[in-house]
Image (cartoon, rainbow, N blue to C red; front, side, top):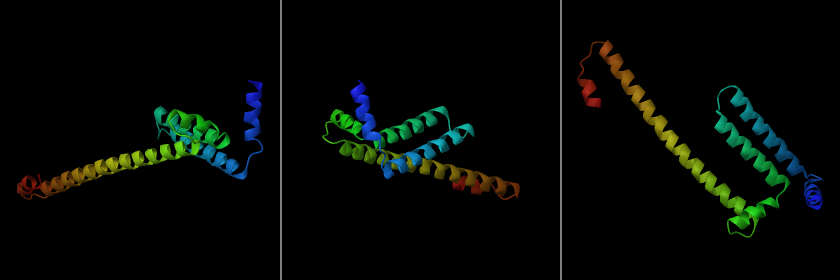
Length: 135
C-alpha cells in the first residue's frame, strides 16, 4: 500500500504547468458552482454533479493512469480513448438537452405573447373574433 501511495505521489509531483493551470481553473469553476448554490440559483443535486465533475477532472489531470482502468471497463485499450469517447457522448447529450430546453422556452414565449396580445385587444374593446382565429 505504501509503495502504491509513493508511486501516485511521484506521478503527481512535480506538477507540470498545464496540470497547475487546469487544477486552478477547475477549483475556480467549482467555486462558481458553490457561489451559485449559496445564492439559491442551484440546487443540491446540481452542486453535487458539478462538484463530482470538477473533482474527477482534477483527478484525471493529476493521475492520468486512472483513466486506463476506466478504459479497460469500457473495453478500450487507452484511457485517452475512453475519455474522448465519454466527452463526445456528453457533448452530444448536452446539445440535445439545450435544443429541447430552447424549444420549450420558445413555445412558452409564444404562448405568453399570444395571451398578452389577446388581453390587450379585449381591453381596447375590439371584437373577440381575433381570439378564435389565433387558436
